[in-house]
Length: 243
Image (cartoon, rainbow, N blue to C red; front, side):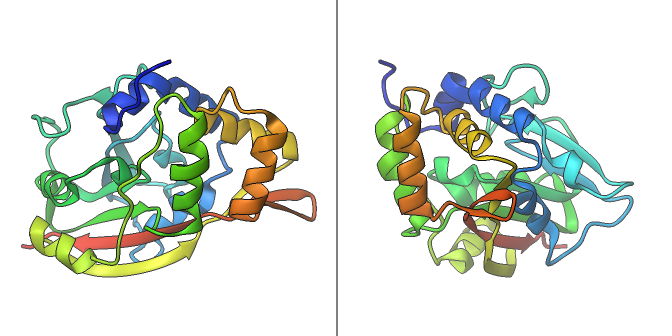
């Protein structure tokens, strides 16, 4: 048994490859999650985006033509691209018009410090887009309760509370968006849904019938026409970099 850990680096050093297999196998399942990053402040041709931590580099596929994404990782568990850097080290990538941190900040205890670091690589007047699970939500209960019991790294999320203004102030940023969005995942079949969840969350030892029961009970997973839907809500925060 691998010792339970809380840091992003430790968690994804252990199961980043499983997460990447899930995303590569169902690349459009989380489409809404990615698209909603920019729904309040749409990207335009010529924009440059720094995505960290970028997992296996999935964001580019959801950006319009003419937008360039640079992905950085802070764990080497995904292997290959994107490049791996220290969370608070020297990233050596210059400045971008946007910065992104999607579904990773709940593994970071000091969110303002990370946002401040990210803001150093966003041009004045640019935007940082942060999205993650809401504290006290059904998603947080699912992750910290059920998933934490079955995966090797455990799960103790530091989810987004209703303190976005405080985070912005501590990071030296201006909050320009704060909303919770229904970014439900969509799949073509039940086996695909369960296979995706097994790999994404690293619950390879969990019986499929148990996983199905908990995803139905805790999240409200259900069929819809010829698709399977996993309700999934995130809080979306946009911060403006001063200048």
